[in-house]
Length: 79
Image (cartoon, rainbow, N blue to C red; front, side):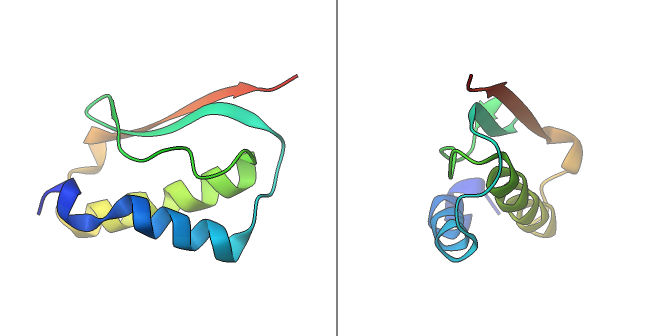
């Protein structure tokens, strides 16, 4: 299954809406597949991004995407 068929952006928005925007403010926190951004950063909070990306990564692996192709760029803290 391709990443496009998983509708990860919609899943990310739904999770973020329920979870809220928590954690320290971070910019450039990205979920990557083969070095390419998969979804937009779901929130400013680092805790929210970590939670959302963990769920999305599990969905991707369950869909047959090798976990070695999935990485996270943790961005930088906004000062």
